[in-house]
Figure (tube, each protein chain N blue to C red):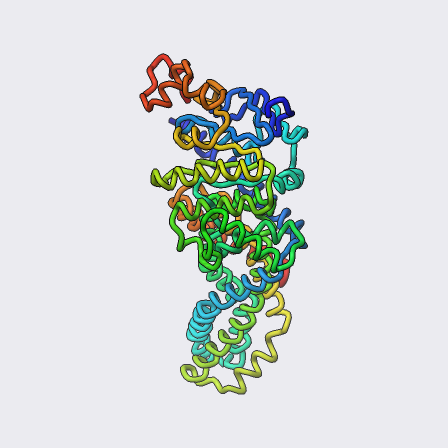
Amino acid sequence: MFQSICEAIGKKIINGCAAAGRMSMLFMETIKRLKDADMKEVFRQMALLGADSLPIVLMTILCTGMVFSVQTAKEFVRFGAASSVGGIVAIAMARELVPVLTGVVVAGRIGAAIAAEIGTMKVTEQVDALRVMAANPVSFLVVPRFIAIVLMMPVLVVFANLIGNIGGWVVAHYYAGIGTFTYENSIKVLAETYDMVGGMIKSSVFGAIIAIVGCYKGLNAPNGAEGVGLATTASVVLSIILIFITNYFLSILLYV
Amino acid sequence: MYEKEPVIKIRKLKIAFGSKVVLDEIDLDLYPGETLAVIGPSGTGKSTVLKVMTGLLAPTSGSVVIQGREVSGFGEAEWDELRKFMGVVFQYSALFDFLTVGENVAFGLRRHFNLSEEEIQAKVTDLLQMVGLPDTAKMMPSELSGGMKKRVGLARALAMQPQIVFYDEPTAGLDPVMTMTISRLIRKTQQQLGVASLLVTHDMESAFLAADRIAMLYNGRIVQVGTVPEIKNSTNPVVRAFISGQELKKEDLNGKQ
């Protein structure tokens, strides 16, 4: 009994390490093959990705900005710190909330789509077909998606920051009675451009994670329609976990 | 035909996944210009033979020589050089579902040949005509029936003028009429283009019609290799049972995986 539990745990750990290794290898190969990128396909992926995720990202961040303002504005006014609300909301959004939440939303929307699409290609032998036609699956499938997400994430972040701060201002102004000038000035005084640049860098890293995890899970999908479903779920869960872990270290690296 | 050096020469090929042995030291030759059918019940490693020959699976041990070169240690880049001379027709046709039928056929041409757009379109039209599917170039694979997809798969495999063509269960899941159509198409392709073909199938009728020689694979071993008449008149109990569709007796099931 005890032995079998130990064996099961050990097996899980070994499998986990092996998967981490293979994912790192896929990442290295993707970097090595960046030069093979078909720019037409990259632009197609970027358009697909941006158009697909922008509305949900904006919706998520608008609500986050508003709720953050709800929780801070009145309390800050009570302590006579009304002039800090705008800056606090802006910094929190730019540094942490926007990149992480955008990452989570894109992982759920785009990461899942990638895993499902490539997984379907894998189980219907289309990936094998690419290989026997001397078209490398990494160059052909992974590289364009990788470049597209890494480039599009910071763009989404810029739009998200804009809408998040508008949401914050609406609530601060109409709910807590903070003047527009005070709010705007607070952002100017407290927040720096670097706050947002750091968030953009973070989001690119998250994009790379989403692309590699989604492609890896798709390329290694178990056979059958069920396999595609498993690959899709696994890719979303793993991407989100990795985003949160990576975010902690990136925050220390970028802002401490 | 058989005095020439084989295009593919397999010696003592072994494939194992962990402790499960799929192919157990098999020898097989594919000669230029012939169609060799590998037959056998499902799960005996027929498709594995094809995967090894196209570099999708590395052998556990043994030797695979393709066009005079030992390929068992080849990397993906070296395989890609060889694959430019190969065409593969997949079991479920494996057409790229994000491309039109025409673009599927043109895929290899666009990547590996320096042709003008008119030349590519002309070739695509010719190939689709050859497999009996003119005017389908603009359609998406999802609009086609199973038999039509198989034929488009064949057109795609032949587009790069391969020297070796592989067929993985080309007639699986098709009605009897379409099965015969595809088998005749395989025969016609080989006669017209003079390519070496390897046909993996469990359909005896199809193998008899399309192949020159037949190799029977059973439990990871080659039971018999011979010409079509030799196999038809075989005295080997496993081959006879398989041809007549009888269940194999207990004493034949040595080392069933």
